[in-house]
Image 1: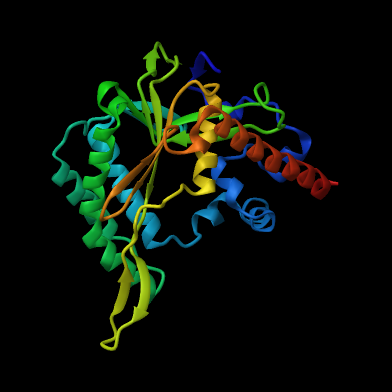
Image 2: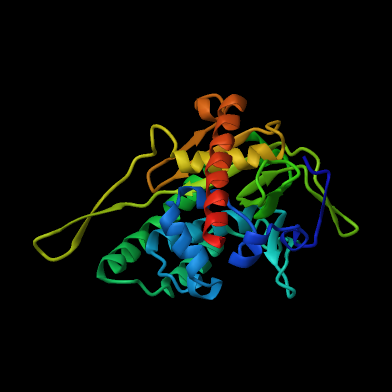
Length: 299
C-alpha cells in the first residue's frame, strides 16, 4: 500500500477532523476494537495519557512482554524504538543472536521487579517465573518451524498506519507488528517497504488460577493451545494484512509452557484472503460507528 514510509510520525502529519481535535484523539488501533464503547470512552476520552499509564498491569501482561522481548532481542535484525524525540525509529538490534539463556535471565530479573496488584496476582507472578523459560523455548521452536522466520531479515515492532487515503474512516488505524520477515530496509532516512515475506502475531498463554488448596496455596490449571484463534487476535492480523493489500501471509502463534500452535491460511479460514478482508471490514464498521458517536459527543 505504501511504497515509502517517512520516519516522521505519521500521526502528526494527518489532517484530523474537528471532533478528533476537540476530543484529543488521533487514531484507532486493532486492540481498541475489543474494548466496549463505554469503556473506550472512559479510557480514551476521560483519562489522560498519563492517567492511562497508571492503570494497573497484571502478571500475564508482564510475563508476555518478557517472552516477547527475549524472542525479539535474540532474533530481530531491527527493532522499532522510541528515540530521544519520542518518535518511533528503526534501530539495529545489538542483541541479535545473543545467548538465549542470558536474555531470558535478564528478562526474568526485570519481571521480578514487577509489583503485583494483590495476593492473587502475586501467586500468578510466582507461578509464571517458573513458566517463562519453557514458553520462550516453545517460541523459538515455533519461529524455526515457520520457514520465512529463518530465511529473511526480521523487523520487530514496526509501526504501520492505514490512513484515510486507504480506508473510509476519518481517523487512521495504527498498529505495530510483532515480527515482519523481510521487505524492510532503511535508505537515507526513508523506510523502503516492499512486500515482506510474512507477518507474525505472537500471543502467550499462562496457567489459569484455580482454587485455594487446604494448605493455603493457590492451585493452577495448565492451559492447552486453543483449537481456534481468538476473534480479537484475528482482527489484529487483518489490519496487518490490509496494510499490504492481503498479499502477505499472516501467522498467528500461541505459546504456553507445554506447547506452541501456529495458525495460518492452511488451517484457519479466517487467515485466508477472504477471511482477512471480512475481518478488516468488521473492524472498520465498528470504528465508523464510534466516529459517529464521537461527533455526537462533540455537539
